[in-house]
Image 1 (tube, helix red, strand yellow):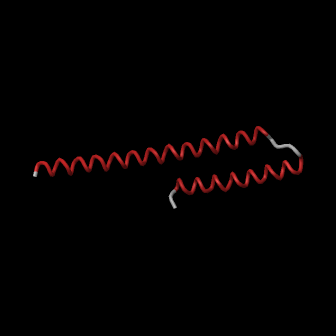
Image 2: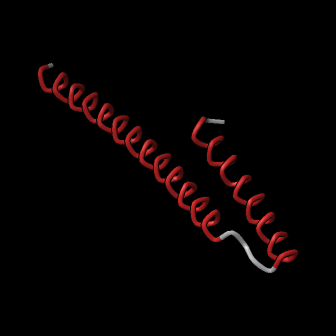
Length: 80
């Protein structure tokens, strides 16, 4: 399992646990801490956004490397 996949799995598990906890708090007290909920989901969206940015950047770099290798092979074929 890659690091980003592990981070996303942990974030998903923690989000489920957080949501269940907020439901229990709501059932018991009929209110939830709105600021905490807002901050939690803001952090989760931020973390997932950063993970997506990292993955996109890695894919772009890999694709660029393959493109350069292909161009080099084509150039070598033309010179032969």
